[in-house]
Figure 1 (cartoon, rainbow, N blue to C red):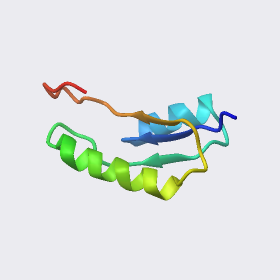
Figure 2: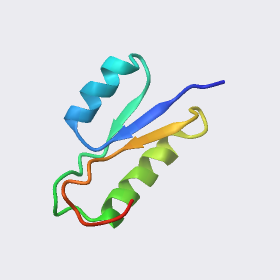
Figure 3: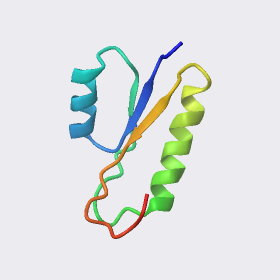
Figure 4: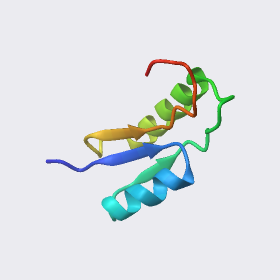
Amino acid sequence: MINPAFIVDGYTELKIVQNICPGQPIKRTDLNGKSVTIVAMAKKIAWHIRLLGNRYYPIIILVDKEEREISF
């Protein structure tokens, strides 16, 4: 059964997902901006995934690259 949860990096993404999928859990990393490292984001996302446990599938992660020159 599909029961998605979302991990987003900021308030704008949170509001968009709330409108598209009302009632589904959404966790914010609150790590956005060009100076945030991918390592910091990965640690925070992993923490949220552990908190969500095995209750949700899939877990969808939405982050903004913020003009970083990196590959996701």
